[in-house]
View 1 (cartoon, rainbow, N blue to C red):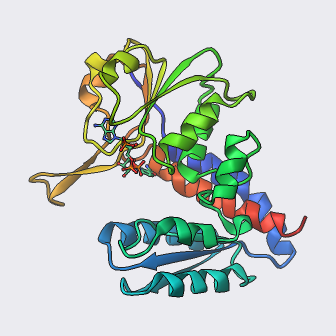
View 2: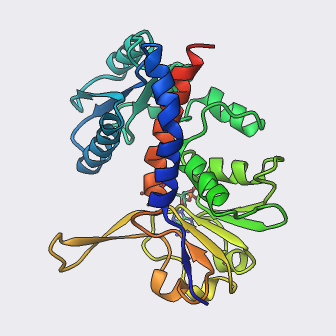
Length: 292
Ligand code: NDP
């Protein structure tokens, strides 16, 4: 069976095309969607993620500013800064790049973001709306996965979806989204995590497997049934002798899944580009909501 590659690049290009008119309309009303990215400390991976997000905003003619703080900032100081951003009309969205230093309670900081500017969808208000089936801002990675399903006409209704991983950023919200009672969802969803015994017992029954654990090439061809669809969220750096010194791999072992799975998102180029596209879309949405 030849595997179909579910390209996040292709889907994200379609998202950006669809956003063009919405951005033009906003600009005709003197509104440029703006994103504040709050970066604390010097974590190299966070700096790379933030740069790629900011670059995309600027390329699309949107506004984005990275507000960098030293790792020694206190929690109270950071929350004070978030409050300033809540009241700054230039920013329709606020993103706090995680992880934060250990002395800062990330939940307290996320809770300080105005839910109307919470374009990452991590605020308890937005997570609650999602859980009750009336989402406003949906976390970007799970939202991007749902858009991949839509784009490639993958229906979830009547399918068994197995999500491996239960973080608040990916696993938990995608398990809610896939099982919502709505036209493009209606999946029958099982969640696996680090305390699940014999994960392959579940993945072998799955029509669709969503991997979000951060464990390189965890899922093998023998762990799935023929024809399963794999959404690989994992991004893992594996050190090797390549010029860069490392290769990025997903949570799925592409070489053994190829030939058994019917379709799969690549790493890189799968879910990653969709996460950024959904951040842009949520920020445009936040700007539009200021007009309502
Ligand atoms: P977290 O570390 O927050 O959560 C990992 C989850 O996986 C936890 O629920 C954990 O279980 C579970 N888990 C870990 N190891 C195993 C295992 N061996 N078997 C079963 N379950 C396991 O990670 P994130 O959700 O933030 O990210 C997951 C991966 O996705 C990472 O590689 C990350 O880099 C990537 N990612 C990619 C994005 C993209 O845009 N492509 C965006 C966000 C993340 P437990 O709850 O029991 O601890």
